[in-house]
Image: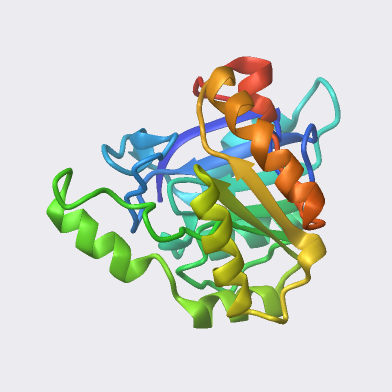
Length: 233
């Protein structure tokens, strides 16, 4: 399994914000969002191939000492690309850890998972044809797989987290949700796109009131506020 980084930090997004967690970040993605904040796991994937045993060894070392940490986050890139996630999550669950898997919801694996954090990619999330014609086509063809979404929300506790760059994305998210009436709207979060505080604050100025009006959760990117857009956070 190609791994970009394994680190301990605080969860910065979603319903478990501020929870001490060990993060295992897979390197590799089947999509190419223009706004990807971890291009070293997608556009230019970095890292090394590690066995499940080696990943667990590093996780165990991070869990030792210091503040109690009982949460593991499998993220990326797209961790669902790797079949090794099945034995890895089983081993983490045996250690008594709460497991979050962060995914775009285009691929399925039979995992041990306590929170499936699904971030659907809306129209316009991929590069333009001028930027990258091959990935413009491939991203659009791959970004929405309804049968996978239905299976994930049926089998796991979940949160649905949309990245919102403009008001048009809010409409696109509502259209997407219309395809899945079974989704609990109390599990939906809208998060501003941005990797610096100025951009996040500008979008929050209109996105947060929008969420209040529609009884949706506004999702802050607290790790950007706490640490900036740096690795290992």
